[in-house]
Image (cartoon, rainbow, N blue to C red; front, side, top):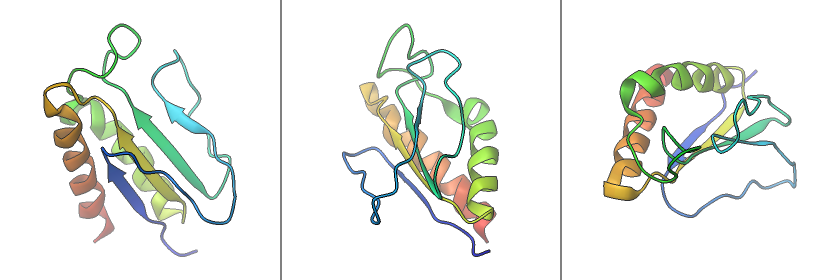
Length: 109
């Protein structure tokens, strides 16, 4: 199986050609399932304390490393992964998106 693609961002984009539906994995519900429902997935980050205070705070490496490991495994299995950061207060979305994109690129080599 060919390796999938990882797309990480913090701007308003999300479209997957072919019409396949996928579960949006996010952090606004406690214990939201991390399940693949298509050959691609969409992961949305609203802030490390999103249930208490949406759109603020930085995830940082400690919180994102386990996520990166899971996403990297899905990409290695051939799934496309789209990740979107909405924790934009103080520009943390850009910092976290950059960290995750760099981390996933590192493992793709």
